[in-house]
Length: 356
Image 1 (cartoon, rainbow, N blue to C red):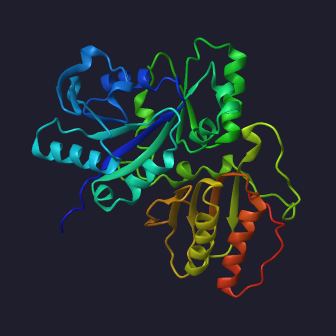
Image 2: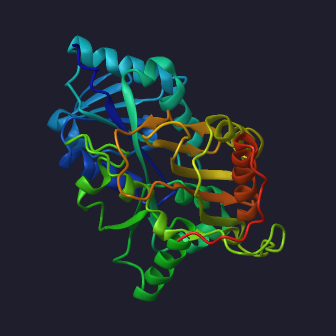
């Protein structure tokens, strides 16, 4: 039997203007040989001159077997050119790709390309989103620019930079704020770009080293507050900073979910509320099967669903975690419950349960 091709992992590196992405990239190239770095514009990133070995049009071959190239037109042809050059042996056989965005970029279109372009998806896999946050100016940027809030909300890892220049109480307050925006994202400190770079690899559902799914750590639902006992419409968004528009919460469905009910609920949430749905993850008990299904989405972009070989624990309830903007947790719970119960032929109960 032929083995499936090994897909090249892709890390999306984002972060607001001046948050230290370039410094981090320079150190990353030194510490992770055989990395391909894709940038929006080559001239915008000041890679150290001693790393550059030769230039070949939009590609630069770097020391340590790394490669740097620029986005030419759109991301899909850039990744194709990079992959084909690797296959022909024109450039070193890189083992991973890091895509660096501009400081005000929305991560969703890049994720859409990697996840949904058929040619790209057959050769690359999305490993995770890493966001740099300036410890000195992070609070101001989160207050002033919703792009900064969105970048923090969709991250798998949050890299705090310039912590050596900021006051300890400033850093502590920023950490707390980020923890409320994105409860499950691990916060890592980088000093002048130096950090343990192994902590930003293998962030997806499957660890590429041993192929073992770590669903519990990936979902991390215990860090999200469950939808409470309040009835629909009683909780109203607060006014003020961008943060007040962001909610992170979990929803747990006790009964198995019919596939048609799940599809209908996702179509409703993703199709009609994608602008409000920043990110969600789920492990779902589909009626009629004894294996769990894993779901993951960012705004309108859905990852390919994955069926696991077995449940990671004795808890076989469907568990969803959400980060949303201007969207009531009770509304999301209602959509999931209504579609589930309608497909099952059960009446929809009032939202009174609290999940742990």
